Picture (cartoon, rainbow, N blue to C red):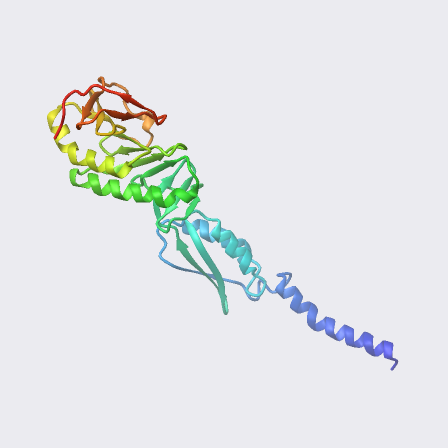
Length: 279
């Protein structure tokens, strides 16, 4: 036998072995003989929809045990709402195993993102958001996450004794803070000494509410030694969107704590008239 015929025979023999293997691995054949019948889900799922999870895995599982593309299936699962991390494996003879770690939501961040308990931002798209989550309306980069969470936690502790929760924290591009409380009060804090001002206001709030039968609508804390209060004529219904609040207001009353300086939003100071000192 010539050398050419020997080489040709060798190549044909190799092809007869290799081509069926390639066909199986590509899913051209074998999907019916070695099907994937079982989807095993690992992890404590609270928010990931199992039906959507199955729908994400099914197109890849149809190729059979040997042809399933695990990386593609894993990428599809990772795109589902609430999925922080996903891992897809196969177990002989017919099992696809999916392990998922869910995002644990801490707050809404702007209009289209959520902040997890681990401090990560993830898309809001397709996620059903718990109504109890606070909202962080922040016109600042993600680098300010730690500052926003710290102020929220401190403010929550300050107002908790009165049974009041912080529903919203806002930070504008000038660094000025404001809060919306669960009783409908909008608290304008300003950009300087935010924690000191909030502590002083929280300490005096029970007495202020006891002195006035009208509901408090707005508190402006941007005074050096006092703050201005606006009282509403009717109770304000709290909604996540501050624009939905009632607009009926009585004139603001300035409360002085012994000083006369006022920090305007533009950073300048002006003179005000004290309407009585508080202790």
